[in-house]
Image (cartoon, rainbow, N blue to C red; front, side, top):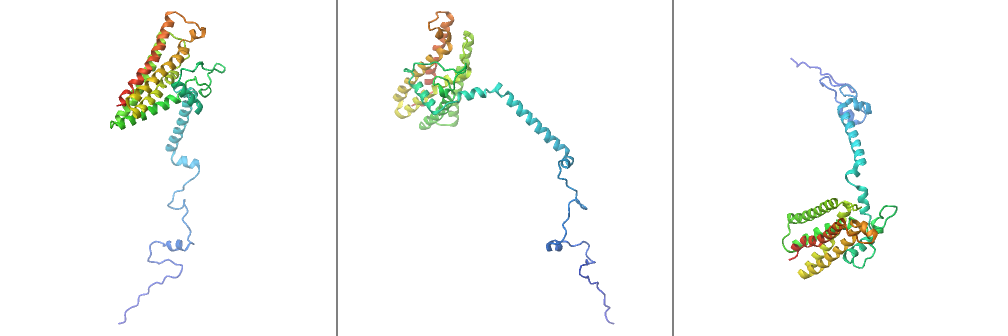
Amino acid sequence: MPASKRRVPVSQPGMADPHQLFDDTSSAQSRGYGAQRVPGGLGYPAASTSPQGAFLADPVSNMAMAYGSSLAAQGKELVDKNIDRFIPVTKLKYYFAVDTMYVGKKLGLLVFPYLHQDWEVQYQQDTPVAPRFDVNAPDLYIPAMAFITYVLVAGLALGTQDRFSPDLLGLQASSALAWLTLEVLAILLSLYLVTVNTDLSTIDLVAFLGYKYVGMIGGVLMGLLFGKIGYYLVLGWCCVSIFVFMIRTLRLKILAEAAAEGIPVRGARNQLRMYLTMAVAAAQPLLMYWLTFHLVR
């Protein structure tokens, strides 16, 4: 009996295979004429690109972002308004208004103050002129750079003696800062107890007391090059120079009334002012030696 022939349906061009469960669209896309699926169609959520749509899509995060931006803007405005109450930026700009000529003249004045005659600070409309226009004006550039250089030279001295360590260098820097802070606080307390009316500010004190680092650098460098003899010779000269510099500078600040009159006032209060000036000037050589003698062997 001849085998029965089963008719297999033949798929015509353009018609889907009846045994295929899903349509095959990959060939159409590969040929480039298949229609791409558009977002927002069946099975795809519509994505809105407008700000209103984005806000409605995730309102909590957008509200938090807007609130955070508002707080940041308010905080920046508050800091800009009140920064001078905590950090006197305007005053600090004055103390760093220097140039190369001023730095050279000031260093020469610190090392050779004996021939300088005019120690008065120049004023323009009741305001002291910038340091670059007056060598007698205090600045913070030289003390800051001298302090950093002093720490570096101390590290060099410790390294040449095989005693360098980060902890020891940090102790050297922190002790120098601690002594400077103690000096400023002691002078401010003394001025308050003596009731001195002076225009000497805290920043002025930091500037004047920071000038001693220049002589300390010179002493340590000469000690590294020429030993103890070079150290004592250069440091001794710089100690005498800073003593003379501080006396001639501070007497116009602390003894302003007597200097303005041009005659000595033999009152008890004026004697206290003179002793205070001498004490501040005498403390500079002592600290210069105390902070450097152990760096030279």
